[in-house]
Image 1 (tube, rainbow, N blue to C red):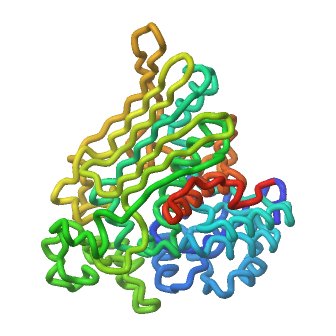
Image 2: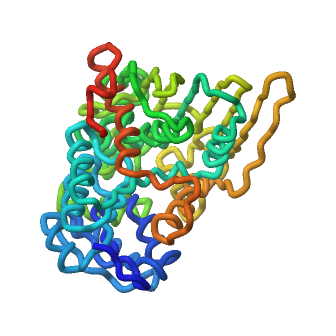
Image 3: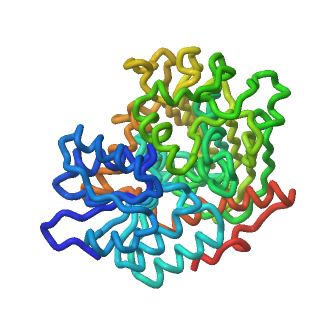
Length: 442
């Protein structure tokens, strides 16, 4: 379905966890002149009710709610033009394909899905229906990343030979993947898929290239039952109402965060989902320390490392070329303060923002036979993923021109996914993996 000229596009959201809130706010506040939120769908009524209450705080009427099993009926009844998919990763393909076959376009949270068969199912549905899937790779919209792409496209380092990319998740943010459903690889694909697909997409976009072969090694080193050997574990299964969690810096205290309490603690009676699992409890099937060596269609290589238990948070990207080197370093938090250790990244603590940790970003061009050049970047902020969330929703919902082609297609989503899927297979086999053996793109 497509909106009539001069009318607002009708959006429905499926999956009303915490990530949905950013999209919902953008729809009903910043882009209410071009977009209309018309429905929620979820497996949990309490979560949908929480979002409707928050809509009231924004001065917006409540929207109809549907159980996820009635998703297709909702599309027809509410005359939906575009579906926003923000559900658990492993469920994405079911909603995406159903929406496409109903004549809707889709905006899907990253990763597009969690494995090759589900990815193929989405790609086949896009070809069959002629509808559009856009993957919400918000990091493409970060002003730092946009400037890096411009510099590379303009030949600032010449022909690109290699990329080194290191991403550090600190012991607050990294730990959170081990408290919730992401700890189960069957639900999330592991951090190589759920988290690193962001980073692999950036490299594909920066290089204007596609991955060819991946060799990787990864393990669960710090978290999980085996991580007890490091001496941090407390004896509880979930933090809420567990005295053993009181002094645990790895415990998430849902009752202290009103929004999280509504979405999860108050909602768990419906589905039994615990958002605050002990990060050292048994049942973790994802890795927390991963190294990747990838080759690309241009001949360039990438070395990549993701650490999910670092003392500080940020990343380093270094691009080596025939005319020099480009270096990006971003510090998102210099350390995890004791007061913030049991919170989520960016969460308000008793009404105050935890801002004592500091941060900085530098982009430096190092040409041959010349002094390094510090590149100043306008528009970068430490909030909203470097300002990327607002810039992304302007393009996706507001119709802002996109000369950098930042809106990622289903094919882009598949290419980002392929590097992580190949890495996961390489973890298991100990051998290099050709991505062409995983999926048919053309």
